[in-house]
Length: 157
Image (tube, rainbow, N blue to C red; front, side, top):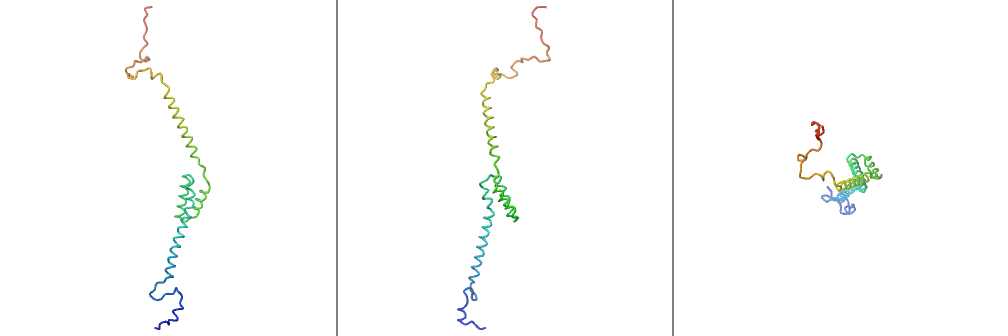
């Protein structure tokens, strides 16, 4: 085989390598392709998480619903779930739970204050009986229906 003349070697472009040398252009393109794939993946996941980031300022129910729709979109590759999540975030759901919780808390405080007022009022029936007596020690004041009523004898016959 005939070798090339030195004049011909000087005219070759930089990306043509000789035998046994490293192909610099191929290594550069591989690195560029890997960086490009990683950057496209990061951009895709950043864009995919957009509804979830927007939902962090809303209530917990809306955040959970958007998170589930975003995961469904990611795993099934159905873009309709992502669009639904984006629409749910765009429309603010009214917060009905906070006023209801406030009403319930206020009613609870009112009920506790009424219980305290009733506890301050003395009970006359409880104060009449001594505390150390039991129910067996106290004589019954009501006649039982089994016993016939007693007749009083006053000496007039």
